[in-house]
Image: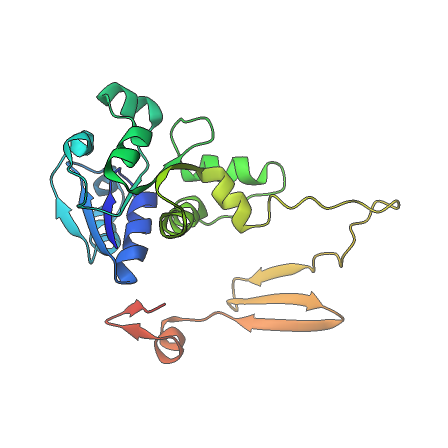
Length: 227
């Protein structure tokens, strides 16, 4: 399919990257991106945009786009920004005859990874990995492929919560227990670089998988893993 990627930062770029890796024609419109301000941002920019056609076009000019050039549009532009530009994604999706998917924060504010994690997990804990952008990017790519023509809005925190079963509602037994086995006790041995878990009376040790192991056991091409 022909995909138009609008917006900035990681999530829409990650979605576009996944779609490009699966053989779709992805065109990215951007004038500037805060990715370049991050540590090793230029390297991240090159990695997350490989396989795309990059064009220096402002996203608001999508209202001038003729129908028939794209099948899918993805963006993470805030609703108030589209309104300020005089662009209505729902109207444009109908005019262009495309599936248009917008990724936004739950409150239509800024979608930052740490905020998405906090909203997804609440007081259940913190996972020290930046999953908000990549999880949302994966859902954005999936929605772009699966949804019908029209405008669709997905929420970053909801994407992350769904990935970790955060939406699952489980009835509690009368004695206060949950109706399945309690989570096992996990720990990470930093010195030995391995994960250890007690499961069904057994001690299971999973060694860290270094670069040599990944190169020998995972499909890759030029250092990039192939899905």
